[in-house]
Picture 1 (cartoon, one colour):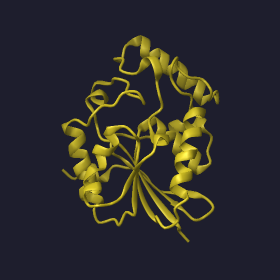
Picture 2: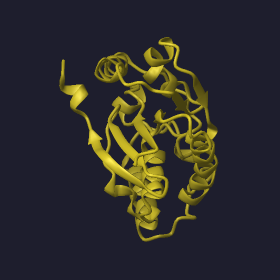
Picture 3: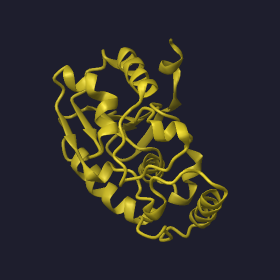
Length: 206
């Protein structure tokens, strides 16, 4: 029997997303026009779902992405555990051959299982998981919240999906995503099962 359903979405597009600039935890960007449109499309598709609670990160792009649900009066809570991975010295940097090489290198470490590796001033996947555990502890401690909407960030979402479904964090690349796509997970009291994978249907309705 399903005890809780998590609707986990990535935030809508920002100008930095569009320009390929690294955001991370330390960059508090706003949605751009395309991101606001994505937010409206998602709202139109899911406004009839009876969400008991909304959880978002402490960065404004997540709240802006689901603000229309908050406007319906659904209670919400910010959890730092849902923030994006901190990319340290690379946050706010434009994409160059050098930054691309640095990212490729760190991804190779991570997919090889070297999950304590991180950029200077940034966070490792293991450090992100440690704060995600605290966030999920809060979310799962409230059995009365049966249907929950979570809005977060791309890299952090990949790590969370690994952890919730019991696969190693080194397999994070197995969870594709774009702005404002949906992963839906069902909790039966023992384990999570993905019942909707990388769903973007709502974005194609305009």
